[in-house]
Amino acid sequence: MCLSILGTFNSYAQNNLKTLEEIGFENLSEIQEEGHYYLSYENNRYRYEGDALIVVLENLKLSVQTVKVSILILNRGIGITSISFDAIDLVKLKNGELSSDIFTEKSTFSFSVDKLIAKFEALDKANSSYLKAETIVGLNLDYALGNFDNSIRQKLNFQPELFSVIGKGAVISGRYNIPTFNEIDQENQRLRMARITQDIRWKDNIFLNLNFGFFTPNRYGFSGRVDRYLGSERLKMRFDFGITRGLSLDENFKIQIENNINTFNMAGGIDYRWNRYNTDISIRYGSYLLGDTGYKASLKRQFDEVFIGLFVNKTTFGQIAGFDFQVPLSFKRHMKNNGFRVRAKDFFYLDYNYRYDSDLAAEYFQGSSILSQIQEYYPNVLREKVKKYYSKNLKAAY
Image (cartoon, rainbow, N blue to C red):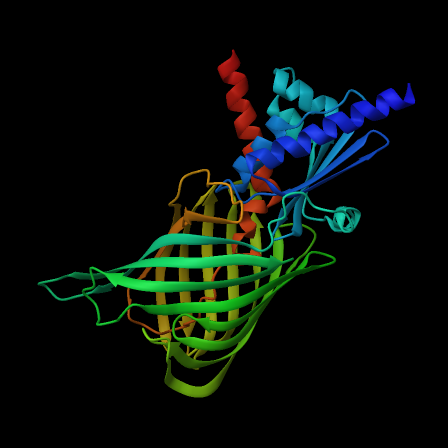
């Protein structure tokens, strides 16, 4: 009887890993422990983390001996968020016998995953995400206010990026910029960004991001950022720092010196997440690229994958205000990465202020990191996605 039960456990577990690997999920591992089933996965197949979680839940097969389920969601091999629930509740949810409101209320969506990370740390991972490469093809829009003959001047940038995760939290990437339909300047195509970045998660919800290389706009050097979440996503303390100088690479990959003097930047602030409306209220104070000092305040609302924000910046150079937005750009599901793939850039981002050419509160952009993507992993965001999806399915069934 014991051997039969053990065989049933192993059969379901192997089917789960095999199924999820065939779909394209990476860094897969699982543990079975006295009626408790543990699963970890990383999504690089679906554009939105909420959609990926739904696919995992829909394909998860559990034995009758399973009482509890805990899932750890990874990014670049680092544990970010977990969801825990009773196995019978998932079965009832799929069968329409349990409402999504009750399921999400009984389940635990958490940012505190230190124990789960330790549990999976020494395990081998199926379908590793490391040492694979991808070319990310995207568009970027620059614009400037012109005269009466040409009120808005534009520059549409085609930006292919070569990207690879080389180890846990470690990424190398390079982004090439090809200006097209350029009404603003005489910029030639060139490498705009080439960097190595390392994400680290410490205990007690502390995240560190380090970057070295060429950033935009025309900066070379080192930068870092520390985020400390106080218990959950509701309250976050943030600290930015960097040492850069004005260097860039031209179309022949030769270094162009704009300002060879080191610039030290430092800023600190606090973010509050209003979970009821998935809205971030942020304020930061510090020094910026051109030597001005002051604060940056923003209000940003998240609608799943869409972000709309308002901001005001006030420094020793003056004051500006404006808005920004981010919308999905690519298909909902990417090709599987079996070593190399080409995919579209996930999002299109644009900001506007009433003094477009102002260098007030200027900062550099170092490319994507766990911290730039982490809002998709917020426990409340994933909870609402599960609630919304299964609520619609239940209504459709009736």
